[in-house]
Length: 462
Ligand SMILES: [Zn+2]
Image (cartoon, rainbow, N blue to C red):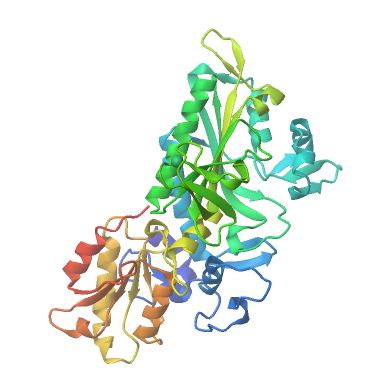
């Protein structure tokens, strides 16, 4: 790959050659990464919370770290570091969804008004739909969710054979909602990434089983990320259906009010309880209020959409039965921001470690310093760490060697790389020692090259 790159695109290969080009290792050099914004201008106006302008910690940190930039209200550009994280997050979600039998599809963003009128949601959802007209005066909305599309797809193709059941179709695509008051960055935007899954079963019983499987899979995703979440009974809203649950990350900035039982595992969005409910409907225990950021939602739809579009499942006796459906969403970009919101400090980003943009940030000596004598060791260490299985693409070199080590370490912590390896003074000792900083625990260790390699071998990557 590298050889190919060099021969076909010589100018690119030459540009990469500044940090030892002797190996086949693919180098990620910070100086070359598009990451606008001077991280040291702490007082830049964009980072100041303005009165009456709601902002959130995740929004400020993501802006400061050059992860996102606003384009229009509630819409953002995702920059290289954020895209790396998002891709990792999607890989985790893909893995779990496919483990339970999910098949990934990718449906059209433009949804015809006719379909949405057929379900009655064109008027019901109303102003939250972003609508447009094509040159033939045909009306569309930019899909906020795809129950109509997927049900009509399955119905048009003649329904589902019993051999394919349960059928679990999902996608991870951009969705659109014309929020009246978008705020908090990626937490409440008008354009966002959502993972939406639609399930089809032949009976209510089978659909309940599928519902439970998907909810368990959601819990597995949040556990994998190391995020404490609560699952609460929820209102079915304009999606409709017979049963619904929300998944929340408890956070002060959360816009949903939740009531959690102290004595059993009952938990509910306050919207689903009578206003005067103070005790648990299951055990009579005391209910405690908490705020949450909604990151997932599940609905048992029954036959609401399959009935309208005539989506059927064929039994083994070839009898068509109206499909029992479920739909399930995870706000992927919101989950990215929400995890930063709940894990970070005011100054430093803390990622769920699996989705940090890079697992390791390597800081070589400052140019002209006496540590420069260890420059060759830095390159050797880089290549050795990259040679560790799965880490080849996970090592970022902060090659801005005009900056002091201290400044770069500070910035690496702000960016939240799980491991920062510094080639400093002790690298000149015999044997050379490298400073390894664990961002999560704050632990600083001085390790030999073998020690470093032993440690990084245990880093989990996705
Ligand atoms: Zn209870």
